[in-house]
Length: 506
Image 1: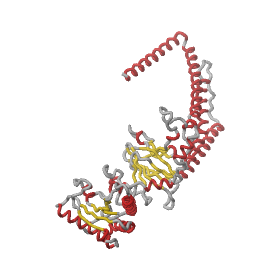
Image 2: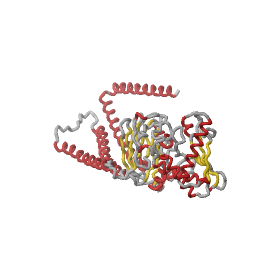
Image 3: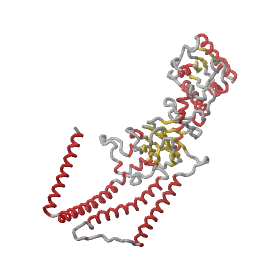
Image 4: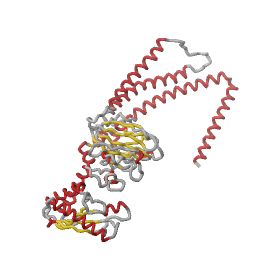
């Protein structure tokens, strides 16, 4: 019905235009062609002048009325170091182009009126050649353009400094796809690992990260709705890529905008200079930001209190384009370091210990050893200090490894976990524990029971060799009878093959 009504309106408008044309033709025959043309030219000339006045006044008024909602004016000053320079270049460019814009429109519409045909055979003066005029028309724009281009090149070089290995900066990676961004942070080593599109696996490795590169194993990948954290007053380099169509990495408040092109990595460098909290305080000084954020809730938070920096895609990349918006939180460096330290690497949470893990049973990484030591210490301390009886007394020894199908302890990999346990046994001198061995259900139950018992005793022997009193230790195998996960999957069987620490008394 809507389309039918729209079609009917267009049809009626066409009929009206045709009828007006016929009336004009009939009027011309009655009044004479010359008189009608003179009247029409005058009417059109006046209409063009009126339009010029309304258009220019409207343009200037709207720019002034909405300047506080435009980047670079009012409260929305730059939140990055280089942004102030860009805003200055924009203002200078606006000044010169604004003059040209106003003058050309005045000349365009005024001359259309002044030199309309009135029947007096009036003609505009034509210069066949005027050296002075041509010189002015050439030199003035050339000087202005030279000034703008030179300042632009200087700003570009300042925005894209050449970073070396000696420079301190945080490099992150943004990968755009329909319809989200994957943000990758480096771990403790400060380096992003390699990627290879041939390694892309939608189920386990959607970015194609090369897990054989040791720099990759501590990299952190944020999910599609996670807030992006950045440290204030720190140089940030962003690698920008895309997996499907053209996207655009756009941080309006930081004056950052760069295309994300499939197969062609780009980058940008910027330095945030205001935390989210500081920018909110800046906005709170302006009346238009003191209104309720939700008009339906007048007593709710103010508009400035709900402000967030954002990452947007500035390309129309599909119907879900709007959903690529991500919130950015700029915080002090100390707060950022605490947040980053609390994030777990993608490798640890999704790859480690699985069949696709190239380092399974071959190596432990420093960040794993450190994190596991802290976790083991926390688990035991929680039980020791618990007065309610609700703390878990069964603690899995996650970094104790054996040869496949054997009770032979892999001392090279297991020593870190067991040495940390020795330290804790020394710290809690009254603690007595049982070392419990478990297997999956592959093979017969009797063999599994024997294997689990042998593995538990191997751990016991190691602890005794490190000075732990045998009277505080016991070992027992439980075979396949106490699985934590299903034995129907490889991952489940991997979890069920474990050695546990059971605290008997504290």
